Image 1 (cartoon, rainbow, N blue to C red):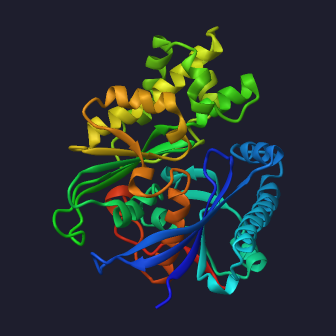
Image 2 (image 1 turned 180 degrees about the vertical axis):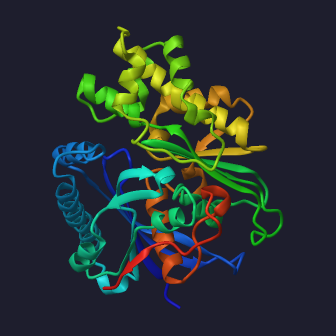
Length: 379
């Protein structure tokens, strides 16, 4: 039987662009109960700076907001389609060979306490522009069932990264940092161990905004600018006093809370060196991840980072200094590059939807029970 081919699209809170992964799902030779993904090809298409600014503006109420959001959804669909079509053209693959695209869309609002989340990208238009079935809007059904609608990737992490022999923590550090804890399964992967997943707090989001403001750079490569500064202890204490950090899982967050206004409020009336603020923001991310692991995760035998933050040498070193008894690696050690984990996850989520299989974990999101996630737009 030919492998089932899916495409996963991910555009996250970092707003750098869209990740595209072409994934083949094959039967696990060691465990017939699951299919494992094999990444065949990947592609990245950067957001133009003008588009990034427009998306950031939509994070807050604006004039003529409904029309602006709808037009932005069309723009994103065209960009997503361009990214997909480029990947297929480069690798000489016909759209007819792809079963479906799993599209996360761009988050504009995420307020599960108000029972809504909004990811835009006009999936119907994306279907028309690619001639491929699209599965989108994965979060709404979980929220309707009383959940946070996030994080959704822990179910994928469980299916792909769970180990018989060790307790693993996978930490995705994008704009927001989220943690998946996978307790070891024992001798059978069918007997899943404990799984926990939640957003620990800001990942790269605040540091990216800070370096954009002061250096006109999109991110702090390797954490080099932040490494030139010193941690500002009073500022760190003020940031750590944010009530979100003390909330128990299930919980999720985003730009609705951790944004430039939040940071400016913490800096009000102060005149800190800009590089010291940057260093403190890295420390904030590292400490909130560390505290979350200590507070909510049991024994952790290995830690694997993914997302853009996995490339921040300073952040990785900070985490390693705090987690002295556990080696901090990346998902590359598990066979998956740090930039592609979430795109692969949305290919998997599309597969789950089309196979009418649940894809949320109620213990992670807080939903009443497992649900089939996603809305389908047939080719």
